[in-house]
Length: 173
Image (cartoon, rainbow, N blue to C red; front, side):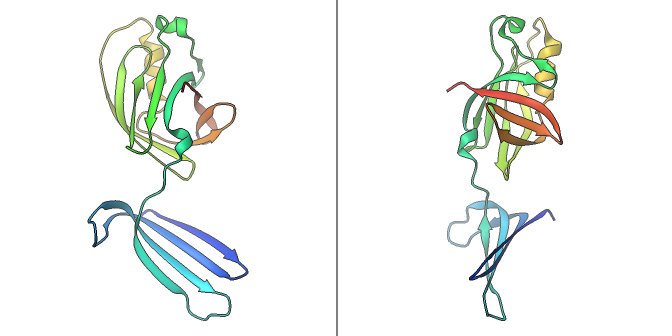
């Protein structure tokens, strides 16, 4: 299974948090979570760690939420005149796990999740219009559809795949 472990040490003791990517439900609500969570807390001077188990999810980064103008996709510098003055954009709703927008020609909609400086874009459904510069529109969607990308905030929101910048976004709202 996909397991992520976090370790923290303080003068009062050590904490290990283990997240196992596996569907999990709590007995009280039966609400489905994406991870089984185990926390081990070993206080300074104690021989045995206390262990707590439950279910959980990552809290989405609220800075990602909202409407974003696509200003660069891979090596393509996106300009509105390339798309008959319809600037390509993404609208991310990290709380609902949805992304939608348009690539300058076609509209799209799909799933996304975020965690630990990553955005995971799922498959997208979209319209299939024929437009001038379809190659540019296709390059835009190919840069993020069905990919796990790292993100960082500079002046803009920069999404990377490894060391390569694949998408640069500017907030519209």
